[in-house]
Every structure is written in structure tokens, then in C-alpha cells.
Length: 286
Image (cartoon, rainbow, N blue to C red; front, side, top):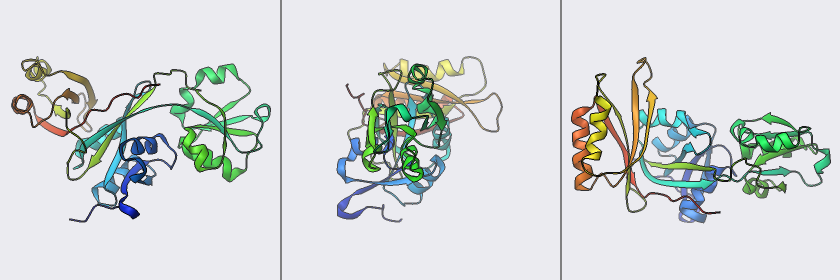
């Protein structure tokens, strides 16, 4: 097996989707601090490939946002990937209006950002109808685009860290419509070793297509007083009207009651895949 990729000075290499300065980088640094060497990937498929082939020690993928909901492509990739969930991070989404040095507020006409970020700032655009939102592939990449174009009549919506990386200025902060806006990330690794003490587990399963199947599956947790933190269904590709369920629950798969619950779940399901047990993240304050 290849040795996990590391940067200089013992840095841990973490693959993210998007460019430097994105919220994924903030999530990586919340887990590893300055030890995180960031490996940008153009899309989620490339992120998973980088971690699966050993180009990095970890992959860090967003799985859900409290406003936009689940990131479906990541959930689909988790279904077939050998990667395991070994950690979790939660980042508060604070969106800022960023422009090049010398740009003036009254001269701005366009605002670049990822479509999800633009949608989360609808109130800002209603208050300033002269500004035209322009969708791009990435929040942090929108700031780079400003620099490349030398645009003084445009701005970008992105995290403040992107302004520092691209030597731009923050004109306004707190553009998001909802302050309680958080994104949850899974830290993924091939070896499956959690980075903290596991107290939460994620599992995927598919039930037989018979009455009461889901009830019986969820009952294996209820009978053991195991608290469910999330239950979500996704369509199974190539099998119309059949679904895979994603369940998060409190506890580690190594605990006796959880191990027994998962054993009973396997008896009741067509398939079960334990994504991993890991240390539960807490939502940051402020």
C-alpha cells in the first residue's frame, strides 16, 4: 500500500473540492490547524479519487448544509467508495462581499459566486437591485476571477479567507439571509482510523420492498435506546422507486449495543454499509 501523502514539515494533506479559500479549507483547518496542506480538486469525483489512490491522507467532503440540504453527489459517491468516515467538521457559513483594491461600492454592477451562495443572499440582492448575480463554479474561485479580469466594476461573494489569499478587500460581511447557516463535512480516509474518540456512527442500508421493512430496521435502534440523529433516503441508481437510507446515530459501532443493533439491521436489510464511527462535531457559536 502507498504511504499517505504528506506535505513538508509533517503537514497532513487534505483533498477538498474547489479552490483554496473555500469553506472546505476552513473545515480542514478547524480539524488540523496549520498542519493541513490543502489539495484542491475540481469536483467531488476527483476528491474521492485523490483519497482512494493515496494522493492525500484525507479527503474532506461537505455532506449537508442547514439551508440548502444534502449534497447528493457526495452521498452517491459514499455508496460505492472504499473510503471510511473518520471525522466530522461543522463550519458556520459567513458570506462576504469582496472586491479588488480600488473598487468602489457605487461602481459595482456584477457579483460573482457559486449558485448556492448567491441563493443564500437573496435579501442582499433585493436590497440592491442594480447588482446582477453571476453564477460561477466556486466561491473562492470567484475572487480569483476578479483578480484575473482586473474587474473594478464587479465583486464576489466568498469567505473572508479568500480575500486574504487573493489580496482583495472585504466591502461587506454577513450577506447570508440566515445566520444559523452551517455546513457539515465528512473527513474520509482509506484506513478507517478515526481522528478522535468515536461517539457517532453513519450507516447506509437498503430494505426489502415489503410492508413494514423500514419500521423493523429503525426498530433495532429504538429497542436499544440508541438515539437517531438523521434519517434520509436517496434513490438507488438503476433501480427505479427503490431507495437507500442514510442514518446517523449516537454511539460507536464498537459498543456492544450498537454492534448488536447493526447485526440485527443486517438480518433485516438487503445490504448494510457502515460508513464509519467518528467524533461528533459541534456547531460553532457566533
